[in-house]
Length: 175
Image (cartoon, rainbow, N blue to C red):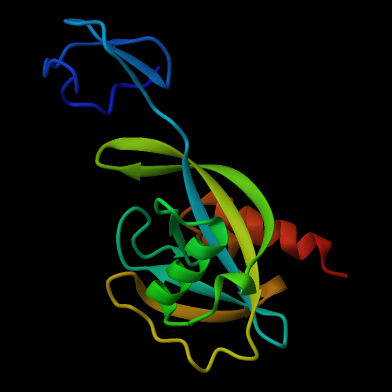
């Protein structure tokens, strides 16, 4: 079972935990129950008119230096499509409306952050652009970008298996 990601009980401030499961931690002092919920995230598969996909190289942990797709946590009051549009704009400077993103599929993932592998549900959305001439990398997010034909994407270099699997599944359905 997992060690609690909580340092102190949010009810009484104590730091003694009983691990009930991978998602439930109970404060030994007061009995308050703390739960880990799945965190929704949006991932963008962006293609150009030649059916090439935009791949990024991560400029921060987790997965520093490894490959990925634009994406991140869905913020309060955002739909998945809105988050995919925002993350795409924040990471690679492509400004697309949320309506440009269409749902593809979801994958369970783990995101290591502050000593805990948080469970995420990665909602993958697809968008198309005429070309990638307007990509502007955001240095704090992305150190490099690549434009790849689907059969040339180096899947074994991805930070997250869920990102690689999204590319693999899209590739499998393309005639």
